[in-house]
Image 1: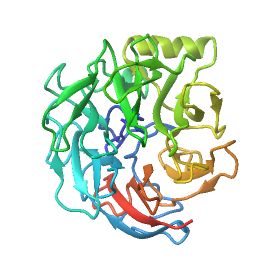
Image 2: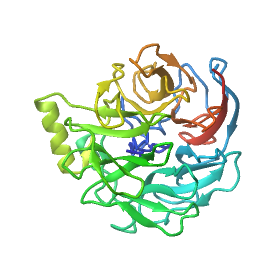
Image 3: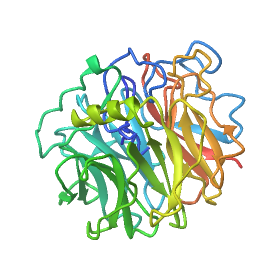
Length: 378
């Protein structure tokens, strides 16, 4: 996951998600170690925007930037199929844990569509607009789950109470869609609305699974030891892009497995991978180093936009920007944002004309993360 906000917005994978989808949780801490994908990390002092700015002269692909949320932690914002609404996770309304809200694509009132209980992550509209889905822990316990044990170093909690739910767009008629012992979250949907991809620990590791839109016919797609998550389908549904951490054999793999037994994962090393929709032809797309996550295909399917901290000039891993590479071989790396803080969770509108993403830019408080929309210029 949620993918799926660190004090200042990580979702999730969550990480959580980095449930891209981003992040499964939003830890509340300002002491974020290097290389960790923390969508809410504090703004960098060097090279980029200071808090209070909204545009940067080097952001050639982004024009007419508009801020949709104001204050708190807001991220993992994704378009409805008709491009008129956006669904996101947020602490809006003084919720202690992320909840799911919808907002019109041109701004306006945020509407709560999750239960207000537990922690949520990685929400998504069905393409026809008739349903939404998201991950939530509310059925396990109504309170916020405890934060991860940082005595293990910087880690994400993979809460076993996370299950995937489906509901009407207003949050009514809530039903579990994917429910198994352990973590189920980071779900997204193919553009034709027929397939859902998600991350689960149901077989003992953090792997990607695909199922029909009604929750039937679950199939495991990945089996390499490590964390596979934050997956999205290509526009034509033929490919899947995702982030992964595959620890090397030996002590690194042992540490990963020991942490996973405690429902924890360390997210500081992630690269992008791509595969065919049936799980075949799995291959690594990037070899950039550090933390790369929340990938999404460009409208033509030829490139992938994503967030990375590899260009952090301070070397602390807290400055994430958006980048773009070829979806064929990871070549032609191009930087998209220069905000000096966190930029992540990008998604193109259904017509390909706009980009929505989360950013620290223009924050009124240190580390504040908000949702922005811009016209996309090729």
